[in-house]
Amino acid sequence: MRYIGNTDEDREQMLKEIGYPDIESLFKAVPDSVHLKTKLNIPQAQSEMELVNNMKSLSKENLNTDDYACFLGAGAYDHFIPAAIDQLISRQEFYTAYTPYQPEISQGTLQAIFEYQTMICELTGLPVANASMYDGATALTEAAIMACDATKRNEILIASSVHPESRQVLDTYAKFRDMTVVETAYNNGQVDLEDLKSKINKNTAAVIVQSPNFFGIIEDVETVAAIAHENKSLLVVSADPISLAVLKSPGELGADIAVGDGQPLGNPLSFGGPYLGFMAVTEKLMRKMPGRIVGQTTDEQGNRGFVLTLQTREQHIRREKATSNICSNQALNALQATIYLTLMGNEGLKKVAELCFSKSHYAYDQLIATGKFTPVFTAPFFKEFAVQSSEGISNLNDRLLENGFIGGYDLGKKYPDHKNVWLVAVTEKRTKQEIDNFARKAGE
Image (cartoon, rainbow, N blue to C red; front, top):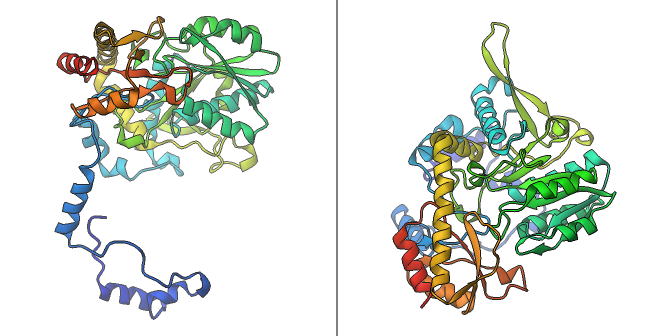
């Protein structure tokens, strides 16, 4: 709150109403031994003017994409966000609403979620989507849990080209759910199909791939689907939603479950969150989905209306019957994604994807042309690519930062075999001049 209007007299009156002489009396149930007897180690109070100036000064220490051209991706991407989004989500009926615990009177919230679900279904090529989840990593993990429950198996095969943080989240959950997680190797940046064939077995509940994967490379999802389904395992595909405007959808390629992070859909980087995860499944798996599904119906007068069709969240039903206890509809973030997709439309989203594709390939060619960078993979990529640098990545990024560029990700941090390999992301926001200057400075 920028301003809280309670005066000392107001507080005294409130205490009198509830029968307490002072603030300390409110906490008399707390043992004196745990009371803090010294002052908190925080700065002294400031006037509003002093505080605002101080906070502005502190905020200037953060690097932001308004002042720096960003070529860093690795899971969070600097896409253009139309001004209308922030204006619309700031309306109080959206900004204060969280989740419809009394759903039928929350028609506005339910309709917004229904439209979101519909758009996710169209993007993923699968018939059923739930209300959004926390983020891409937890959505992927929930998909693995759902696959184990549906198949009555407990082993998950996940490609090592899947985002490292998603694999870490899956490993954490697996420890407490009697699940075994096995990673498959990659070859030329894509899933090593022979390694996959050698590791899949009768206890494999699902195969998980990401496409485009962490290296930015487009996977051979159809072949992976055939291998998984021959073994009666499910296929989970984690996808960049922007790429689905130009690439075949997970559903078309044989995925049983599609997940991903919705951050690219009108949600700002925000130094790491909050974001939203999306999930869509086949009809067969619908009742295994975590969370809730909003459906469309008609009332007694024949008017269009919305209801919570499925509510498998522990806040709605008995805990032992719930499919998950983590699902959140992330209503505001999902609304941002819905408005973004509405504003862009089919053609607009396709144009964004095409620009990402063409500009990233142009940047790749420009970097290779400097002679300082060499290709790492030759498989096709979407908007992100890896190049081998003749210079240490940390030094390279520091040098670029001095020239107004946020450089790429050091793949060696998570993949020790890729020392001095630079993962560069290029979105539709980057101009030709920025890309040319970026390549020139990087090649010096």
